[in-house]
Image (cartoon, rainbow, N blue to C red):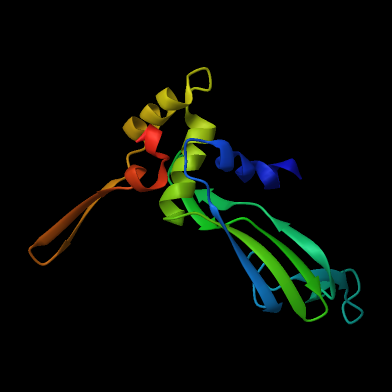
Length: 158
């Protein structure tokens, strides 16, 4: 269960604080992919279960990610959220930093793969060296280079 809440460390890390996005309304936010649901026995197929919409309850969704080619090639999939459903109504709080993909992938590298015996500044330098976030895009003759660490880090760590 605590693994689901590991992302809370991002709030006190060298990365900018993520924003909280609130949703109030009819059930519309997936947890993470499907609408809130629970599993019940399937009377038509004994020994199997089926999903039914959740009437009342909480869902705590941790940061969704996978690794692609190696253990440090992080790929962001979904942001963490907390959802409460009451019949057909939902309250959800989503953790949404600026530049979500780059933010969470770099944060995962910082959290999992940097030397924890070093200072946060040294760990960020390790991130920048080993997990660069500088991209160049072109639109015809126009080229643009962006270092996403300049966007996702607190000013004193840039």
